[in-house]
Length: 251
Length: 94
Image 1 (cartoon, rainbow over the protein chains, first blue to last red):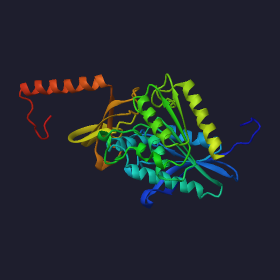
Image 2: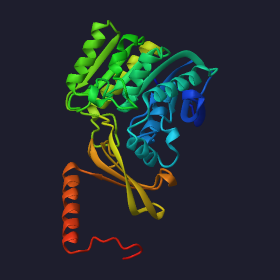
Image 3: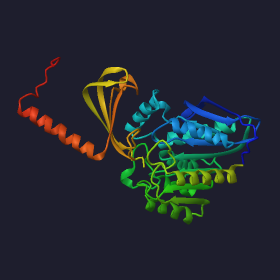
Image 4: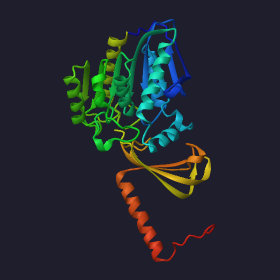
């Protein structure tokens, strides 16, 4: 735990990494100064994009001692303000699942290739990023911990399948190899409490290592301090649970 | 949740963005997370010109009620214009 007489130092910068099909994409990378070894965290940003909130929490994870990278999953859409780029991705119905999973794996490989790496990497995401984090953990066995915050459409009906998201992530649950932390608001419309229950039932049936936390008085996105859905008490508790989970499994 | 409910339609017209007026080629209509409006979901319309990059965008984020009212209002205005014989397109006209 941090003490006020401790030295703190961070380095944060944009880096270029290899993503899906070897494409070069940009990413925001922050890590504590020092020789390490450092566990790594990959952050899967949400539908509103590679935005200020995700840059902020990249620094937050780094301050908590993780070499942290947040790849720009919308890099191929083009460049502009984060909102303009995200709007274009939104209009396209999001990015292909396969591409996002491979981009995130590229980010994880970047972390483990650093001389300061401990070799352990976790993944965290919110909203569509929570879904991508879960999907990535199921399909790419390179993570030692996964945090899914209110990832919508992990449970999908057939009618919700799209060319970019053809398969419900819950289908891949049998392949999940890492411990999972799930954080959800009971007032959320997606995932609904019933969908969270379905997801939990599948995890339980398959004997997976998971913990789910459901919050009353909170809906979707309740960590977002820049949005009206922010819920202070629930967000503080959710962050505490997130970092306790990561401490347990990555350090 | 991210609904991924989105549709694009080709349009003609002009929009005024951050860098001034530009020709519009597409409208992206979605019911999903807005960036600024204080709702979990909004009816979002981005009037864009994709050939000019992501920045060529005029954005609106509407409440459900506002979106429906807007649709009705556009239809009503067009009906009145049609009844008055004003709907012919005059290239370059005002």
